[in-house]
Image 1: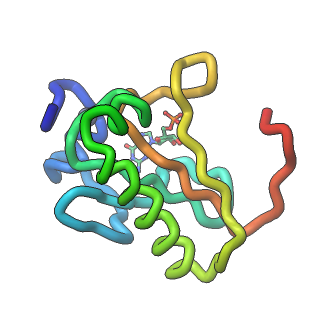
Image 2: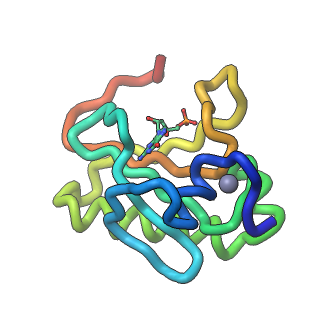
Length: 116
Ligand code: 5GP
Ligand code: ZN
C-alpha cells in the first residue's frame, strides 16, 4: 500500500504535517520524535504504508533492511557510535500507537533491561 487515509505518518511523508527530518531516501524517511524518550529519539519509517514491521517485511523486505541501515546512519550522524536501541512496537499492548511501521532509534543515555 502506498498511503492510507487518516494515517499520521502517511501525512508526514506527504508533507501535510511538518516533521524535523534528519535523513531521507527514495524509500524511507527519518524524523525526530515529537515526545522524545532519550536525548536522541528518531523514527525511521518507510514512505509506503504498512501497519507494522512484519507486514513491511512481507511486502518489501529490502525496505525493512533499509530502515535498519538508515537507523545506523542516523546513530552515526548523532554521534551515538554503536550505542543505541532500536525498537519496533507491534500491537497496542506493546505501546504501538501509530499503525504505520516505524523504527525507534534511541540513544544518548543508558537504558535498562527488561524494558517497561
Ligand atoms: P509508537 O508508540 O506507535 O511505537 O510510536 C509512535 C511515536 O510517534 C511516539 O513515540 C510519539 O511520540 C510519536 N509521534 C506521535 N505523533 C507524532 C507527530 O505528529 N510527529 C512526530 N514527529 N512524532 C509523533
Ligand atoms: Zn501510513
